Length: 491
Image 1: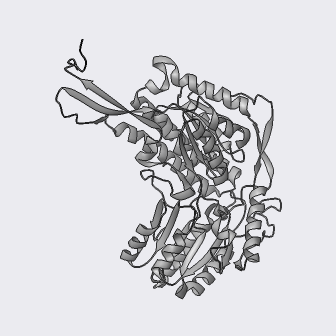
Image 2: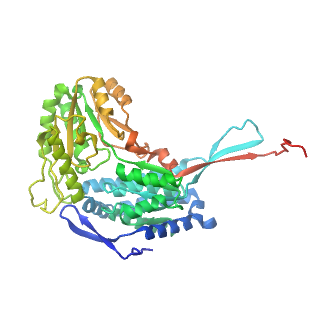
Image 3: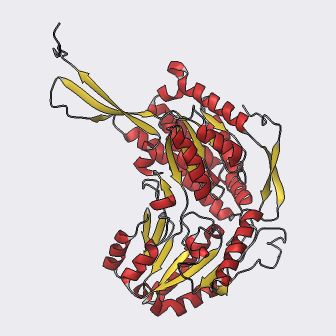
């Protein structure tokens, strides 16, 4: 059942390529959050027929039906995602495929598990087992850069574990999440299990974080908003999972560039690390840490190729990079570049809004891919998550110096090591304090592998078995098959 906001207010969802209105959505508030939580609570608690008491096989089958529907609507959803976020249509297609894989992975994972972990109690007369149960009502907050993908990382494990949920997508990019909820309904999900509230973090997200009937709070987004909402959730003794971004190093050793093929690959991967989706990726390799001996040649080629990136509306053929998501984000990117230049960085390419063209409307939020050389750790652009098409360059001369630079961040989400020396690459990877390390690659992830970070990159894990465990509680059942009196007391 789709309802307007209690206030009757709406919000314009804008196309970042030209700032025109894509759609009007309801602007929910605290009352709408309360109503959604009430519906989720009712669906969780409602007797023998409630969702948590549905057989795992049936819950898994529903996830597979959703996966099939996602593939049926692949082109439609990819277009929605492209127009709403600004990313290219091909990136949108990849997102739909990744979401499909996530739903299928969690369906298979739940079905392949045993009925519980047997615990040896030291007696043949005792049956002791640890089983999993759903947490309850889950509040899910997702970001604007990968709205559908991040929703799937939360919704799929939450549902297959037997939970009900309320999801609040970013107010900037809610449209693909709306479509996903429609697919859940089409797949046969019972009423009240899935609930969507569109609206701003204040008041909707904050109300979900503090609501007494919410059992788990899962947030993906910025550090400031996440810690504030997480504090409210912790105050209510909720289970929490926070993914709060990153400032990710891409460490390139000279031996990775010893051949023409190796050099070209390392440059190509550095471009991919920094500029896919205009750098609006929590795991973006925004910090190039390059060995001094190859720095000049590497950065010159990097800048040359960055200047050739075709910037424009993501739905146009041949476009390689779209706009940033909003005017607010564009202003932030400009401010970061200005501060870096004021602090002594050298502009190698970009650093401005591009000229309008037939694929790049003047009203769009476009910013040229930017390479800033001569950067150092005291710069704001190095220490803070810029979330835009900005690549900074730092240099090192020794392996220890490379590791020290890469680890010198309050975040710890992801990073990469490029080296022609396998032993060195693995040695450095082992020393990096980040949740995911790629060796001679950048950005691939596997649904089977946990995703999460160290430091201020967050708490908890998504994907993999740990991603399912986030949405479950463990229960120990100790059964005495031959009970006898304890006789501790006289009587």
